[in-house]
Image 1 (cartoon, one colour):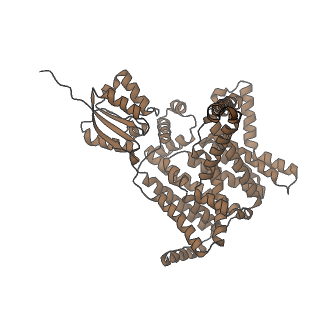
Image 2 (cartoon, rainbow, N blue to C red; image 1 turned 120 degrees about the horizontal axis):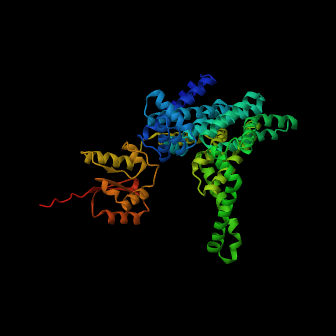
Image 3 (cartoon, one colour; image 1 turned 90 degrees about the vertical axis):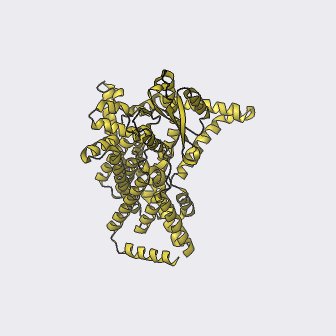
Amino acid sequence: MSVINSLIVKAKRYIATLQPQQCIALLVALSTLVAWRITYVQHGWVNDDSLLYFEVARLLADGQWQAAYKLFPWLLYPAMLALGHIGSGLDIHTTAQVINIVLFSLFSWGFALLILQAGGTLRTMWWGGLLLLSTQYIVGDILGMLLRDEGFWACLTWALLFMLRYMQRGKLPDAYYFQMAIIVAMLFRLEAIVYFILPLSILVHQAQPLRQRLRKSVHAISIPLCGGLLIGAAVTIGIVEVAHLGRLQEIIYLLKQGFIERLQFIENKADLIGNQALGHHLANYGNFAMWSLLVLITLNKTLKVAGWPVLLGLIAGKKAWGHIHHQARQLFSLQLIVGFATSLLIIINAFVLSSRYVIASGIVMLVVSAFCVEYLYKKATIWGKRSLLLVLIGILFANLYDFGKIDLDRLAVEYFKTINTRQQPVLYDTENARFYAHQPFLDRIPSSEFVESLLENGKISDYDYLMISIADDHEDYEQSVKRRLSTNFEHIQTLYGWKKKTKVLIYRKRMTKIAG
């Protein structure tokens, strides 16, 4: 323990000699190193969504703009990949890794500045940085996936920073910086449009006259206000068609009829719960049960997204809420409300809610938790302080450790390289495997659907080797495929994924006998 104490003392002394800008730069540099390490331990693994962005980027780099737009109409992130690929000469995958690290570094920079702007000290900033880098989901899981989310996090965090500065200083450029940051965040993820509501937090500031607060709020939404009026006028007089608005059509559809359709869908689910689960005497509570479930699922995902250390810190150190600048408290409160409402709308609209969609709330929870943990650290005993540091540093190192996770698609591709020495045709049934094997993109068609179609039209006989992926709960599909392939193909190997929950069946075409 004396070694740990010595390291802590040396770290404190070194940090104490640094200027504030140097501390911020050091935290950003540390975040960059963590992002690089997380990228390294992925060993080239790619998320299924990443493959879509890669293909769109390839089309853009080849000048096939219409094909790219048709495949995925929200082009900022793929365009960044394409420009990076063309400008650097790196392949699109490597370009995505570099851009991922850069975007996370920008996010960390904005995150550090946001803590300081909210009234935190440099020590608060360091606690925030440690909490962020030790998040098991945001850093441990999502950071390595090469998604557009990191760009959304960065832009949203800088937007919060500019909004807070505008609330505190009243300088007009900050209002426009806020709006530009939200617009760019929208180009990463469309749901960022809801955060144009944040200037309403200005109205809560009672120290200023109502007219001044209204004027400041209008300035902070002037760009989307003018843009919305111009687009609305253009659509009304027929200059622009709704079909040309890209993914903005989703918002228009949701407002016009989509939301009503989803409410009816939920109503039908509620009737099902009332009649079949609750029974005759409680059937009237079907709606209550359904909405309670949706709210509780959203709340559960929101509270868990930043990790249990953050949640415990928020609960145990709740008195630190008063240490945050009062205008920051107003802004953060509204952001959490808007974030929760947005997550609830997503689960209503799609009837699924990935934890990725609640990270916007998680960012604010991390900022507030930095104040809470600093408060708790000051109040804790020496053993409490050591335990807190060890827990967070332990989670950070767990995020950075290479557990050697099995990438079953890559394993299958490598296996085929060892047995298919004559370069005979191989069927790769997943998009990831086709990517690793440098084969054409097939629009992420599900594995079972792809194999079934080839079995139906007989084209499966065009291949000499087959890769058949089997999920944990697809036993019926496995038996069906084995039976239908047994005539012309022989099963030569089975490759297993993590804890044998998934597997890949390897088949080879049977040798045909030549009549004498």
